[in-house]
Length: 271
Image (tube, rainbow, N blue to C red; front, top):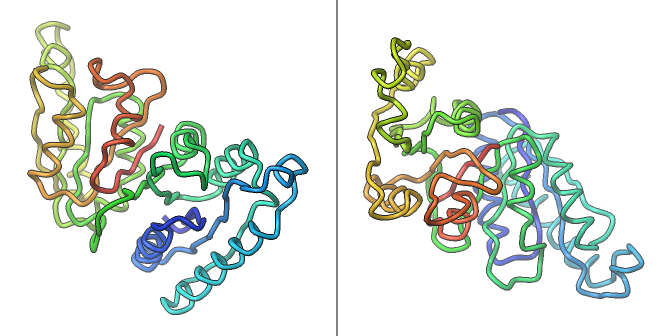
């Protein structure tokens, strides 16, 4: 994890996610790239694909904040900015730039906010091919990654997320794997003789000590169970696979979208 990208705009939580990104860059000896991407509020400029005076002023303020915080922290940083703020350009170019980092730090979308396209975070997660760390739009997070919870269903997306998060888990004080799949999916008698796979054993081989729990039952959606258990564990980071039109909870539709709307702690997602 040597190349981290943080999304920058003029939102109230921009400084918060910047500080978290700086902390991760220091911890892992990484370069930090600040990417300014924001919707244009001046419609004629958006149509002309040009940055308005207002957008330029906002961009310059964000650049100054980034430069100041990075210098004070002694982190190797660089600055990227989009040429203009036409919404589809913001959506596509943010996702594309994210492909050139080991980790992308973004903020949870504030309902009805106009700074960025409302599906910016989800679109980036599902299409950039990189892990995306999403910071909630409320709450303070003095630590991120000391107490990690992993949502595990043995699916492709969960495998990718777990692998992407290994550098964070290796430095964590505690890791809890919350098994999300049903008992019938792991019952050897239903499938004949199969190898006894164990994700905790795999993590231990990688030098990561983790505890395991099973989230069972369908009385409430699995995503609700997950979010509730995170609170009980005092987790400061959850790791999970991201899904498009389907999710881990049939009651709630896409688990990805539901968690992105209801998250209370930082979430690292991979697809």
